[in-house]
Image 1 (cartoon, helix red, strand yellow):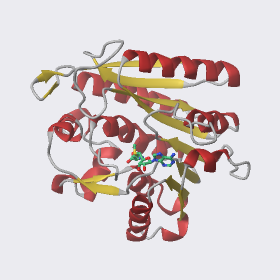
Image 2 (cartoon, protein in one colour):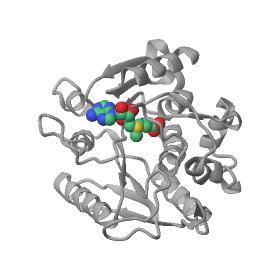
Image 3 (cartoon, protein in one colour):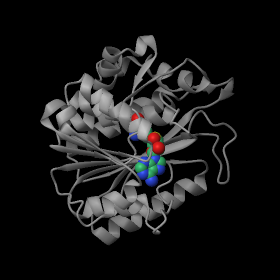
Length: 277
Ligand SMILES: C[S@@+](CC[C@H](N)C(=O)[O-])C[C@H]1O[C@@H](n2cnc3c(N)ncnc32)[C@H](O)[C@@H]1O
């Protein structure tokens, strides 16, 4: 089924920092494991009202790159720019792009988005399992590469028994700028992911930062509401101090903005956390 979660809280806590990180890091090669579409026509519904349409009211973000691009591309007419579109708008022809997805239609839309921006020559798409593609020995990464991994569950094994966390490890260990988005439904899921990231940091002798937002009502075993994703986080490595500071700043703004939030009349405030492993 085509990806249809655009403009929800999980997108907000991914695209807001991503726009500034790319502006700061200016990678000459940009890779996405789970690209989906370059943009979406969305509706106003409980999930987008809790997500992007609630965030757009935040004055502290009025000059952010994220808002600037969303507005330029038509958020007022309910067009939401996905991560491939945001990346192409920010990096323009100064970067080459490697977009992966298992969905042909999603990648066709990415190519269309590239054409609209005059960037077709800079874009390569790969239709298939990105775990297999990125872990191939011939898929060479170094410190000039930015790798954005965007699965829901980074533990899911592909047919060969490899997972998104294996790409995360490969990318960090070769010095590539690495950003992983992950989602979870309960605190046990959150803890499982942070324990794995902590072990990875020790194993690779790397500094990995995690920035999480999750519903206050989440318990160890479930969450009674789901406004798109009950909790999610960004784990990153090999980024500049400026990017890390930006992530921290945005985490505080989002936490504050959602401190009295409701979702379908339910209390839906967010908790936030930043940790360096
Ligand atoms: C969370 S969405 C990506 C959203 C997008 N990155 C954004 O931020 O706008 C997930 C996408 O991952 C793709 N996907 C799922 N499993 C995959 C895999 N093993 N390899 C490549 N793409 C995959 C799906 O087809 C879907 O389009």
